[in-house]
Amino acid sequence: MTQPANHSLSAAAARNLATATVTVPQWDHITPRWLHKLLPFVNVDGGVYRVNRVAQKEGKFQPELLTVDLGEPKLPTTFIDYEVDPREYHLSAIQTVLHTHTRITDLYSNQIDQLREQVRLTVEAVREKEESEIINNPQFGLLKEVSPSQTIETRKGAPTPDDLDELLTRVWKKPAFFLAHPLAIAAFGREATRRGVPPVVVHLFGSPFITWRGVPLIPSNKLEVKDNKTSILLLRVGEAEQGVVGLQKVGVTGEVEPGLSVRYSGTSDNSIASHLVTRYFSVAVLTEDAIARLDNVAVNNYHEYVYPTA
Image (cartoon, rainbow, N blue to C red; front, side):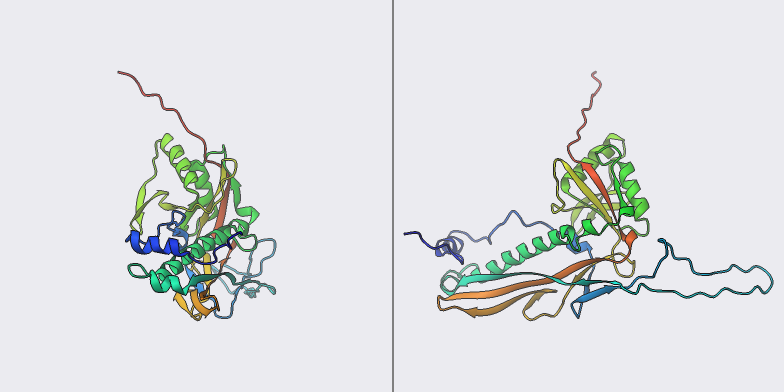
């Protein structure tokens, strides 16, 4: 007879945690998620965030203005028009129901709280999923939100200082950081070093990051690498800067950290306790020039160095 699959932590696994170790469960898929630390988040009370923009004709905004040096010329009249159908961002939700058997939490929480660790690891998974969605979601993800005029390709495949300089010409108003896969950052480091301009290192959050022109390159493994090719993003962030902002709903029932809740939702007749884990989020690009993308970034280009012999 086939045994039914477990829908909650097994007693055997719980005993291992309770009696054989004094460390919390380790999970190698947890990342630092620097993007979430560097991206300002805005509280969205009604679940909808509307981006109102100035209306432009042929991509330009040209109010009627006159520079006066002498005399009393007739002054032009003008007004600032707005888009009549601004874009609205609706918060998305990442949700799951965490199951824990009450016997497990009662009997095997002597050294380590079993429920707390189940919740902690579930929240970590939700945060990892959120970072991936912020970058890759087909509706609002950062890769998709870059306009054609802000998208360029590498000159020769490998990411060079010239390529990153080109990105900086697209987001020149207070650029905050580059966002790239660790392999792309390593590839850029090789190209810069080969040119004799090894990147300067700065420390943020207690960790080192290489920079270009003073702008840090922030790693995220959520940017896809396919056939040794990937993309690099450059962002300006914050509402005050008309940049990129994260969206979230703060103050929901059962909130364990801003915008993320763990809500007890009952115990079944099988002694399975359920907790609903929810994260409401999205991301908005306030102006087109707040983000740019470098495509066709090759990460497999290496150099052979010949050193003179004595």
